[in-house]
Length: 214
Image (cartoon, rainbow, N blue to C red; front, side, top):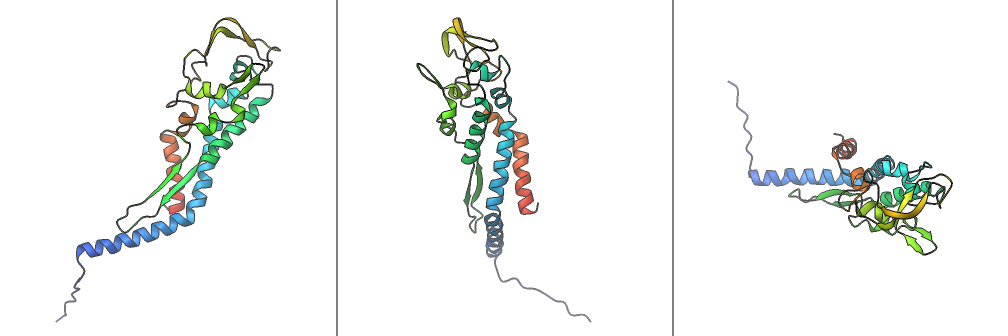
């Protein structure tokens, strides 16, 4: 006759759950602590790609009449430096906020891409064009002013070989605003469009899956 083997669990279900949670928290904290720098670098690479692929960034570097470079009066060749400055500012603003998980699995791992006030961009020297009467905050126009009229009694005249940019100048009559296809507000501009969306979320998820072995 075979003897039955019995196992008696002396811990309560609550105690078991606490031990399981503790083990999970310790392992998650270990992996995330080790992977934090790699996750940050991967996120910064994504940011650079997302920003650089925006139509606004391409148009700022364009040498075509009617481009944003011409309409904002960027000096010839200035667009590339502007694009690099914007990319670097957003990449440098990307950070990680890691709060270790406790035995209740309360904690967090957040990737922060861009300050919502955009001050890191709006204060960039490259976001202004100097002229004889002062400075034109063209990047602020592009990011925050939407379709509102910015200049009254003047409009952009697209013509090769004239103006600071060599792509046109401002002449009397009419008004000027950011072209509607590029205009942005604080809640919807080429920066937010670059950083927020389903494809961006999937790309971030893939980073975590790679590091966590998912």
